[in-house]
Image (cartoon, rainbow, N blue to C red; front, side):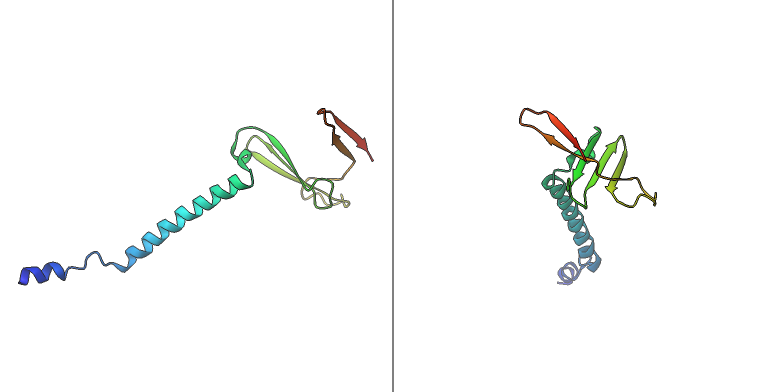
Length: 110
């Protein structure tokens, strides 16, 4: 009878911190899955490729941004009327480009 009690009374597996470790593992798996889903959803897979690229966000609007990747370096340009501050590369709109149905691009300066 004593032997049985000793085995039943052994609560070495009932460490309260083991639950915290398991929750941390689950949270890390969830975070990685969420990041992969967001990258796939917003089609940002080119950020992880070796190729150079250029992305134009909100073309023709006041809050337009041009994002370029050259090698390992990612640059972000925003147009601005005030060119006096040179804390980051800025530009201004100088024209409009249109792509025709046949693939030809027409540039119209302003």
